[in-house]
Length: 72
Image (cartoon, rainbow, N blue to C red; front, side):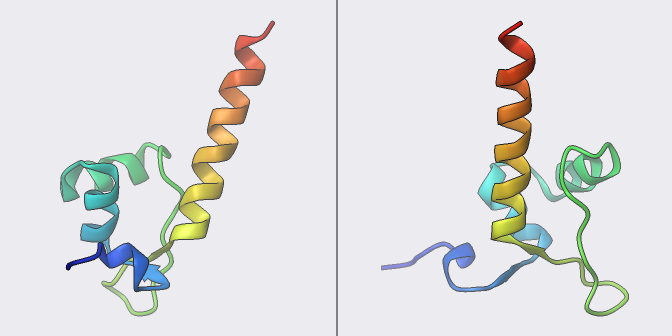
């Protein structure tokens, strides 16, 4: 039985983030550029990585902000 890569790695590659969000790798690039995703950290020059906890916290904060703004 195959499990998603996100469950085994503490840090996600760009492809893992794309798979998690069900978008293309190019869309992940665009989402980072437009600040729809938190910035990645770079353990080396060309290897962006995200922590799943950071992504979850980012989306939870956005969801909470949307609910708060929408309740006025």
